[in-house]
Length: 279
Image: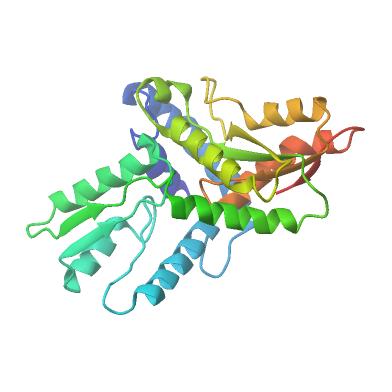
């Protein structure tokens, strides 16, 4: 866990703080405290194939391989941790792959996610004498197939609820607000995904109001708003009693989002006029 966190939090795309300032904070404080907390949380959901992120990504790759057949080789890699992108690219190249499509599995573009995958791809290619031809999958936040998949999945789950929700809150992973001002399109792309999903659900759920929020803040800097916790407060205070929450961006790590939703909402759900919450 410590090795993973060090690699992740040492990436200048993820932490845009001067190294001279960030290095003692990371190595002197965070890496001595955070691994224990993270290890405890992950231990609660760890399975035979490792973390939910790894096991679900592996299952997705295997399902895609089954769909595409033997004519195309499908492999998966982790940006941080194992299987590492370098070893997987080497395996594919050794198997005779001369044209490789690299698909960052982030619907919305962010420098801290999509760009760092492309950075790592460049580093791995730079070390190869004989490079394969490569292409990268662009962000698919507004792709009709992606929106339709979200609509179908959300509609199925909304119909299964024991109540009719008044509000569907789409909670995206937060980013520091400064990334928006620096030109990162993540905020706008999240908003567009939410709008398109709301429009796609409108025919089957005409009375459903769709809201957007951002969660998982870190540090004291201002992050993208509105914050999920404050949105939950505002919804409860406005009289909303039936709420559904979904995380439409990071679909392989939804258990982490759900934990933060529950802790943020439980204090309202136990009060008169509080939230009837489902995720």
